[in-house]
Length: 244
Image 1 (cartoon, rainbow, N blue to C red):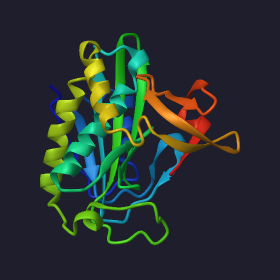
Image 2 (cartoon, rainbow, N blue to C red):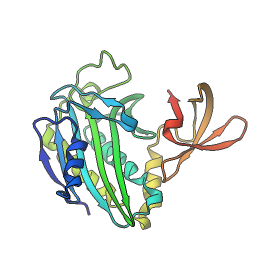
Image 3 (cartoon, rainbow, N blue to C red):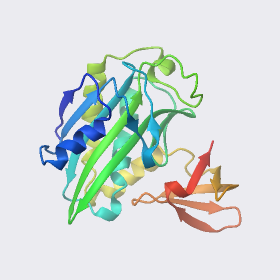
């Protein structure tokens, strides 16, 4: 079981960067983490900017070393993190939660959380820094119509200590499935929460809009789509864009 040793930061340019500095100098242990309500320069997947309102947005990062996880199943780290976030948000009564491949959590069709797992593979060992950004207390998103927050969805502001404790416990639980023997069970739980699983949705591929059925997400992170002509193909997240 993963035990977390968390430290609060009054502010941070990026909680993931904080842990990467510690990892560079080997000054970190598996389960160490940091969090703040004031992240000033966060990033998402492929360098996209993640903006959060001061004292309203939770930036949370934890370092985990996986010893018994095949590197070809590395996306399971994202899967476990996403399930932990959904379990936490569900506890605080956020409605209609799902995982939008590859790394977002939705409430309805609006983004409430983004996840960025940065991994180093060294032989049989995977060193991972898992960053989680959650919209907590924001009351509006004037320039981001597809975003929402815990407060907007519930009209409540959960105490940050309660939220951090709940998220930590759920991360400990779901990360315990990131071992070779439990990987299929984790995948089943993930797909049960996957946005538009086994349904058709539009994608932008090579500049064109096409409709496809989401068949599954492989443990390496590739999404498998079936097109109207019956062809089946796997994609990386940077190759396509989901339209919803």
